[in-house]
Each structure stands twice: as C-alpha cells, then as structure tokens.
Length: 70
Image 1 (tube, helix red, strand yellow):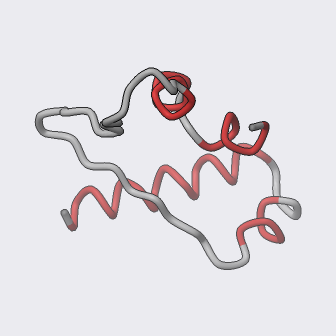
Image 2 (image 1 turned 180 degrees about the horizontal axis):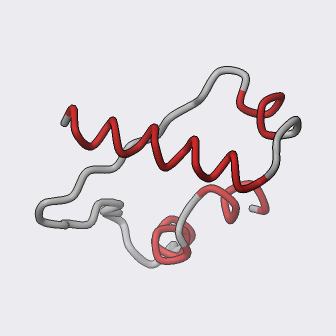
C-alpha cells in the first residue's frame, strides 16, 4: 500500500482499492496531453553532486528539447 501511494495519484489509487466495482477503469481522458515516464541514467549520482538549481535547470532543458522534438 505504501509503495502504491508513492507511485499513483490519489484518485487512481482510490479506484484501484475500491472493491465495490467489478469493472475497474484506470484511465482518464485529457485532450492535448502527453505523459512521459523517463529514467535518466546516472541521475542519482549526478543530482547528488551538483546544486539543486543545476538539477532543475538540466531537467528544464531536457524536457524543453523533448517538447521541441515532439
């Protein structure tokens, strides 16, 4: 339960845990939306060796470039 509460938004978790519904729908509809799940190799080591502002700047630049490509 603790792991799920760290991974899922509360509204999804409540649907997941609700036993009163036999058919569970875990999707929501959003127009013009993209969701990216990413794992950045070496991120933990990098982020622990630089200032937080540098981490935020790197992530902003990374996702700005991703947005341009998409």
